[in-house]
Image 1 (spheres, rainbow, N blue to C red):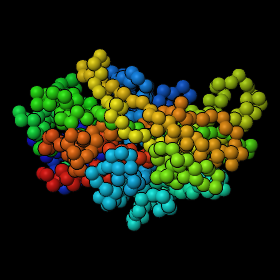
Image 2: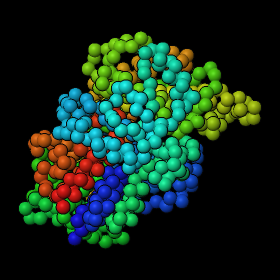
Image 3: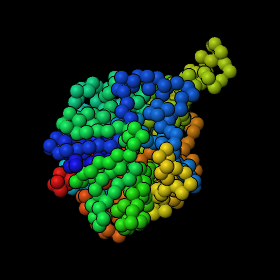
Image 4: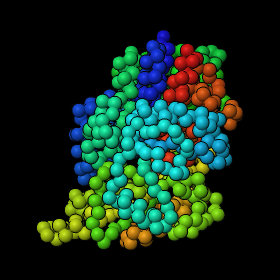
Length: 532
């Protein structure tokens, strides 16, 4: 019997495994996907930038293993996750920031059972573990006394253009926290500027959870790749999980442990609990509240882009270096150039995009321009010069209110490669979110007009999409009837079962969730260690 069995090896599972292994705990990690060869990163990058490339192929997603359904509104689940050692940190953008104090206090109709002050020391520890480059220059962010481990990246040329236009409009801009090295850190080199951070960083300057998986193994942890967990089984009373059942090399096997941590993300975590239904838990493990899978939540994207009448260093960097939280806690705020609004709105995080591509800004690459047209020679060169190198774009993350009808269930008709029902994602955009998206577009258009840009594309209420941040499906709370896990992230129903995932978020705010996932994972490790 092992001390702790952890399901999942993304940032949450990897950090829990590492912290517990370094405290001499016997740890076993079960990961559904493979262990990817780090020496193949350049090859994966080359595949990612080829025209006609399928985004799923870079990290081998798709097929029966990763099947899902989304019958009401399409949800691009397999484009938003990776199964393998390191999890979705293998293809993430690498942006990290702390939730605001307001996100914890019930401003979105439900309060967290912990405060920002409770999580603050874990935020600082998570920044050190991931390696965050940043500056304490966000006047709207939560209080912090700790400096970032590394200095912020310098602003790009387009950031400087946006900053000037925003200053005229009364919008404050500031740096972005990035989990990538602005200088050598933790035996990893500084960023060398490949610009392909999403979906792959060939240099290793961007953090991936592989770093903590490897460190956990060095400390004695056992990590099993390609070992998808089929179900968790409890004792006769249903009060404790006794073993995890997984498949490896075609055979069903088990791990027995004193403590279990599920760190499989906002979709696979509730799916595993639902698949673990038993006589004691006929509606799914730890689901006496009936809320496992409920309140599925994501951030929504609003964007706008166009062309200037002058050249800029388009796509000179593959990640964001500037943004504005001015409309986060007060999305209806009036500025010198933006009219105020008293509508019921969610939080908005304004982003200044300095990378181009159909999946981000709508601006095509030079190769795509060449392939899509019939021009040759000087005519083609003229068109490329006209259409590439002068594009600018703004993005925004918009907070979505957690709603019970948005959920992850088991599909009654489709199964995966092991005969288990696949996850069914039921997700829609509410009217409040639509209003917030329209508000984000209003702010973006004012900035584009101030720049003198010709707007060529817009993403708003009618064509929005998710930001690949799966949250809320095993929500945290103090009331067992209204939540799945408590403030320690231990399930209300099962004494030795803990969840480390964005699935525990009662609300999502409007900032990228990974730093909060990491902070909560470190908190989980401390609690599990105490229980052992």
